[in-house]
Length: 319
Image 1 (cartoon, helix red, strand yellow):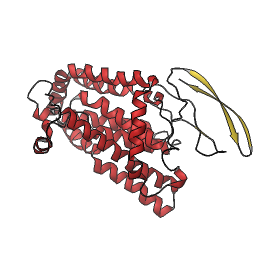
Image 2 (cartoon, one colour):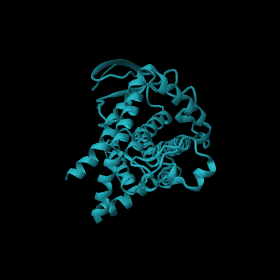
Image 3 (cartoon, helix red, strand yellow):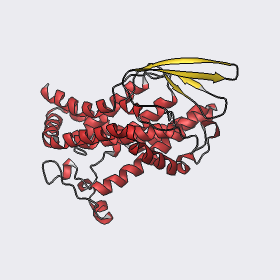
Image 4 (cartoon, one colour):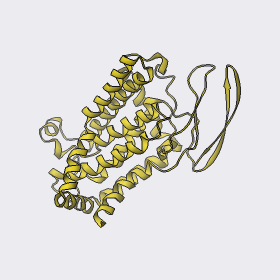
């Protein structure tokens, strides 16, 4: 039992930094001179919701102008937005929090990995579950999910499903490329190739060395968990009324994280940044966060609501 609690603590630490406040109601203003929408928030949100990410209406076509090439042509604006997000003063505490959490987990990586390794080797059930769950983080699985939404949208003439497919592909591409660049900068050993208790860092390994022995360099950050988080975030944002998506999705993210350590692909310290990257790009691609969102704990927010056939005021409590 202590082993299970220890494993849960390490990944829960990653998720709790990115997973605490619950929004009772959130409002998103859509692009357009006379259009606004009030969106009921999911019952479960993440602290990264306090990231100040401007809506991308000025950088990419709106959802009503969806084109087949959005998943590629929007990439430069995604990276530009990400660059602005991480340096905004109000986002600095979250950025530092991810960094501090990563550093703490680096210090305990050896003990945490040994706990996971003993459980994996000693329990056929844990081994079987881990061997299955780790594949849920494969990019091919998420691409298949996006393709399924696309096929459903084409057959059923469902614009929202088509938008979800396009945004999921976009989130996977921008997240995948970002993670691959960071891996080739960090050059961190995975547990299966570790030559030290916590894995050596070999900054900027040559492309030839990296390709020849990837497990020796690809640990940080985790691409599996980043793409899983990006997929969950994008789908949940497109279907806010399906409140089960986030809880189920986060369970899958947690399962993928545990499994990545169990099968010796990653250390626990590789997970927080991967989760944050996937979440951030999922939100950027969807463009749901208002530029006026500010971090905070419990607050009331008053929004004017102007529409063609009338208007009013929306009172929202975020806690």
